[in-house]
Each structure stands twice: as C-alpha cells, then as structure tokens.
Length: 188
Image (cartoon, rainbow, N blue to C red; front, side):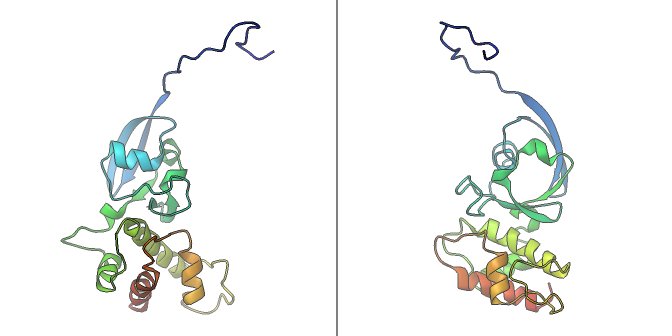
C-alpha cells in the first residue's frame, strides 16, 4: 500500500505549498541572492525575479536556444536548469555582455552584418556565439572536428555544428554566420 493512501478515501486535491530555497550567484558581475521555489528555472529567476528580460523564453524545452546564457564560461540553456542548481555560479546574460551605448564586439558584428530580423533569438544567438569563440580559443573540438591541429577550429561545418542549438525562425542564418566569422577573423 502507498504511504498516505487509505482504501476507500479519495486522494487529497489540496496543493502542497511550494518549497522555497535561497540561492546565491553572480549575474553580470553583481552578486545576487534570491529566495525561489525550488522548481524555478534559471530562466524564470532571471526574467521574473531579476527583471533581466533580454534572455528569452522560446520553446521552454531546450530546443531553440533563445534562453542561452553563459554560466561559468560555458553556454547553457537556462530553461533546462533550476536556479538552485546554479549556486555560486557566475552567469552572464545579454545585458552583461554590453549595452546600446557600449556594445560587445559580437553585438556590433550582429548589427553590422544584419544578423537578426525579428530579434527574438538574437540574445541567445549572441551569448552562444561569444561562448563558442571562447571554446574554439580553448581548443575544444566539436562533433565534426576532423583535424584538431587546424587552427582556428572554425569553418562552415564547424560553425553550423557549434551553433546548431540556436534556432532562428526568420532564417537569418547566413547573416549570423557572417557576423560570427567576421569577429572570429579579427581574433576576438
């Protein structure tokens, strides 16, 4: 017999109160502490609790990349991780990369190359591209890397594979690729 189950009695329909937990991490260089429901995703903590709405909620299933942020130097889908799992981490969102007055070089490249249309996926695309170039600098191969001695590890196939987790419904892929390769060519 299941614990709490009594034969002949209807199951309880009362909702359990949420379990709250404190979590501390650094977001865009600023230490923050939140008290959140333990089921709160990092995406929702950023958007709803910290009001950092640049990170977008697209599919909410880790398939589109609109919610990509940089966590500990690696890109992650913030919809797939709980805020409480990021305790002590350093997180960078699109707001932490640059501002309209002082843009990150990748943001400038996206503007120059017209690497966006509606712009919804752009924050995730930019965060992913920045982290991807750092992966290349660190010599981290992708699944299509044929020769680990070739530097830099960026060609058309590499770029498509490395950015495959970021979708653009508008189809601005060629301009996104132009922005990334232009910046990679400058050694950024």
